[in-house]
Length: 81
Image (cartoon, rainbow, N blue to C red; front, side, top):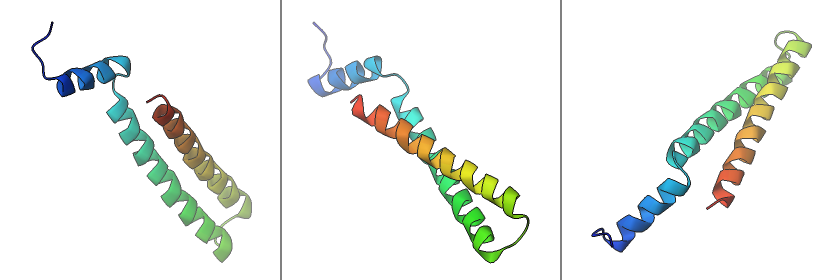
């Protein structure tokens, strides 16, 4: 058998089952935060009426889509645990 402590052995088994999980979670959170900030900015521009309506609405929809995608991917990755 191995000479590793049981906790470390279990952590290594989880990492072998799901490599780079921590990196993926970090990316989901970073890109989700970026999407949230972008959505707030473009929502504020829509409310204020600055710029063209179609361009701001499209950008707002894109940011909300990025945020929704990151939340969905995070939930999928979390459920695999």
